[in-house]
Amino acid sequence: MDDKTSPMSPTPHEAPLTDHEYDGIQEYDNPMPRWWLWMFWASFYFAICYVLYFHVYMKGPSIAEEYAADMRAYREEMAQREVGTTPTEESLGKLMSNAAVMADAETLFKVRCVQCHAANGQGLIGPNLTDDHWIHGKGALLDIYKVVDEGVLTKGMPAWGKQLSRIEVSKVVAYVGSIRGKNLPGKPPEGEKVGPVAGAPAGG
Image 1: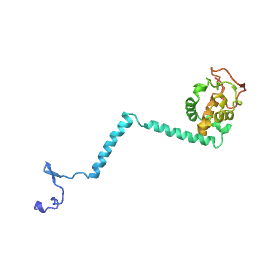
Image 2: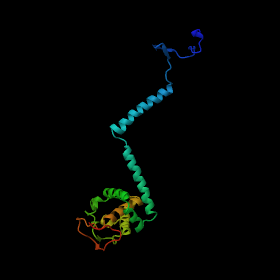
Image 3: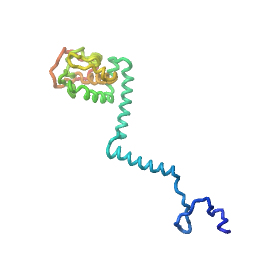
Image 4: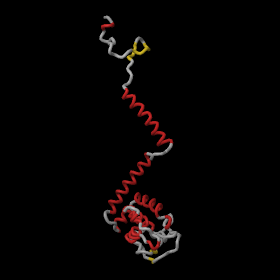
């Protein structure tokens, strides 16, 4: 059969052959479509920029940081469900019993409260929060909530309810509740001595 009439023979509209041959076989010179090349190079440069931004210059959040942020948001939502629309002694007590929420609460306390109450609540400008003396109220969680939320401006205590969300105030209150009765060495007692507060942890 004549190669020129063979069904397998190149036709004029087909791409030209490449100039190399292997074992009597030649390939058509079919370049990749331009859209495919654009996608390839865009992906290539994106990958380089991604590595530089996240892993070389450390500008963006890591996967671990994004996961931690997602978990904090989940715990925030969970805490909001626990507290409900109006904080109660019971709902604030539930926050105290949630170790994950209390870890977030401790972080919040150390950001907002250490300037006056020290890192462990033992008191600096503000009173020692770990002893059994209370200036305002009797040390109940709702008493603490009122002080944190509304503040005591005459004593320099800001109204945190104007700066923090309701659930953030609730978490700070729950953390303060968790350190009641620990009697850590620090600022001398102030205010009125009260008996053991229901729900407070044992001293230590």
